[in-house]
Amino acid sequence: MNIRSAVFTVSSQKLSQCPSDGLPEFAFIGRSNVGKSSLINMLADRPGLAKVSSTPGKTRLINHFRMDDRWYLVDLPGYGYARVSKSERGAFSKLITDYVLRRESMVLLFVLVDSRLEPQRIDLSFIDMLGEHGVPFAIVFTKGDKLSSDRLASHVALYRRTLLRSWEELPPMFVTSSEKKSGRGEILDFIGECLETVGGR
Image 1 (cartoon, rainbow, N blue to C red):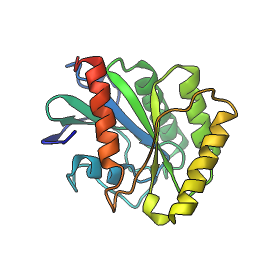
Image 2 (cartoon, one colour):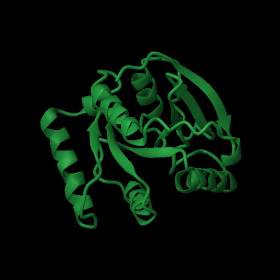
Image 3 (cartoon, helix red, strand yellow):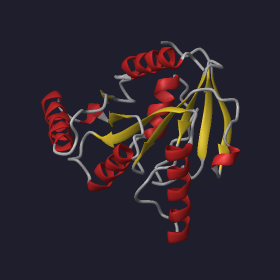
Image 4 (cartoon, rainbow, N blue to C red):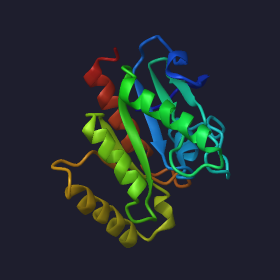
């Protein structure tokens, strides 16, 4: 699947402010500084679409990007570390859980994890929460160019083994590099297949 147009639509502080047109949504989430904005820009092939920041926790709103007037790419606030107050973190957490658990338009959630790291407790806890609530998701390994192919394969295999301790069936997994634009075609083709399944709504 190719992206012909990608347009920022709205930033929302709460679920009720999100678009109400019912177009299918594919959301992206991960720990702060996992490379989410870079990945979104790479997928859309629009370098400045999502703002990239060196400051963790910069995304504090739900950002909707309308893709080809057919579906939305949704940029969710990062979870975990952020240089904000405890009350603000609580507000982000509610915003994330409200969207993930209650957004009827969401077809799939892409959970981003840093391929350079061993499985992190905060990511595994979030993934377990998705499983408990039956939220459809896929895992995206970011920054795949920062490791040798052998170490990358080893880290992905470790993640699979770790998940299989509590999961009978593994979610779809993608390995990406925003710098090398690897994984882009696989993710977009997967989104295209999902859109066919939901009939474009």
